[in-house]
Amino acid sequence: MELKRVNRQDLRRLAQKGVVTTRDLSELFDLPPVRARDLAYYLKVRGFLVHVQKGLYACAPLDVDPKRFVPDPYLVVRKALGESYAFSHLSALALLGFEQTVRRTIHVSAPGVRSRRRKLGVLTVHVHSARKDGWLEATTTMRRGGESLRVTTPERTLVDLASLPNSMQGYEEALEAYRSLFPRAEPEKLRQELLANPSGTVRARAGHLLGAIMPGASVPDDLLTEIQDSVKKMSPIYLATKPGNPSNRFDRRFSVVYPGRG
Image (cartoon, rainbow, N blue to C red; front, side, top):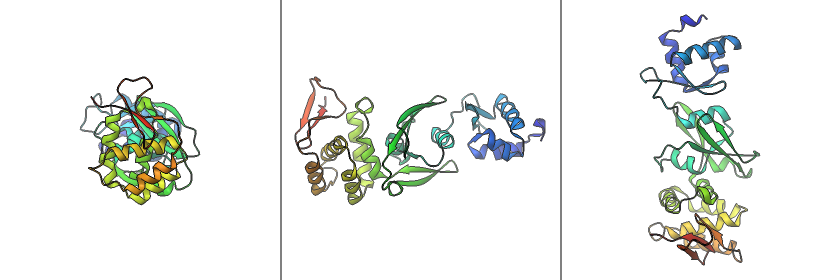
């Protein structure tokens, strides 16, 4: 296939892909790898592809100025990392419809991987190691841009949000996330997720946040009691604050130190 023979129908097919690799181009246009790389360069120069990283490109819609085109970060990460990862934490919160902010930091989880941070073009991807047991039950799928994305369930997402380090926590944001997402969670599944989590810190933080969103949210008191029993005799746990902050408050039930409001 000569590069000059790429027509509008070819470009429409390409735009439907969302994000492609040079291997995708090779298969889509029946080209050898070397010619696929040439084609990628040709399409990038003409504004039909936006370079993300080596061998990875986002397809710019034909009716959009490529200089202003911002690739969908979830489709980019899904293509780069593969289907074995699930969007989790704050990214799951956004995909489940409870956060409108488009962040440049994306969170994904998968069993058997090393927790780390990696760069993907302008994106920062936080990779989290997840428990292998119950992983399939802790994820679901959703459609976005013609692709199927794996996302953590509301129950796992609530637990994951309590696991974020203090540097990523905003107390009011955490409360709002719990208020928004808890009504979508099944209490029994949430109980299983929480009590199966090996981290007392995560259980204590989640217990505090669940207690803090009451009475507006109908959190079962027996769930809070079970969480409380599982974190007895633990040292104080900090949530979205540091020792010495004069606004700190203390939740005795879950031994959680949290920032006061106003």
